[in-house]
Length: 351
Image 1 (cartoon, rainbow, N blue to C red):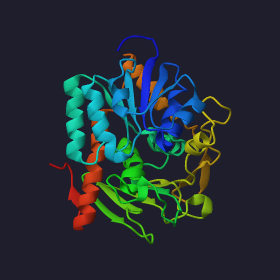
Image 2 (cartoon, rainbow, N blue to C red):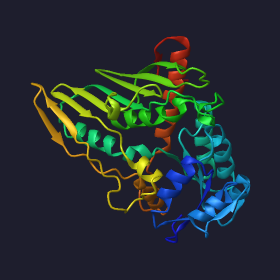
Image 3 (cartoon, rainbow, N blue to C red):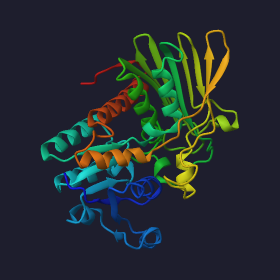
Image 4 (tube, rainbow, N blue to C red):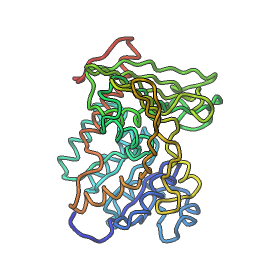
């Protein structure tokens, strides 16, 4: 695609992901034009923008000749189905994470994208979180020497099970498919693929049907990365664990609070608005003697995913998320499932 006209974009799904994340970020990028949304919520689409068409049938949106890019924000179990259909219809595709339920399915979709000559990009938007950007920069600057251990936690204290597909035990529900892909992707951006994976995946809430507690350890030479996602543990605002803690040969980094862009989007604050992406929680840097200094947090910019995607589709920049990196996330997810089920350390790569 070489045209500089706005890329006509359609979204499948208008729940939290489609309405808050995708629609909010797409509309902030001038080179993208949100043209249609596949949903039964016609009135909500009209309230967002009367110029956006509401199409009841996802396949009809995929087949629409007025759509160049299909964004899949439907429930996780349908991601691969609609991605396959869109690629076969000759569309470029963005898929919310995870883009498949298995490594084999992910590899098949990657092959199909190459065969059709279409671009498939997975929405790993939290590469542009303020907390992650800040920690990544400090690591790259050598602020604590060589990293030997990283803890990354994404916790939400929700002790009551809610009636929604993300928690009902159906295919694609649970934290391993919801929050863990963010943590895994960020770890792979920092350190690449690990040599091996171990994991504990559990249901701890009364009446729970899907996993609500996930602990994954990525094993590297001279480094351990521990990832945790929980619906049973308060975050740092309520005395819980910090979002990141990183140990190195010359000290420690602590980033306590989670990026606020999701909360801002829910509150109808969008890119370009005053305060967008700002993070008042500084990075704590402890040297080898325990002396504390701080670094200001880098402003979050999740809209960079779609700005980068538009440049990529127009031939003026790289993909914001290389497809092989998204497949690698899927490989770690599958290794974690095997490790938890069989109670062992699973070596990578998987066959």
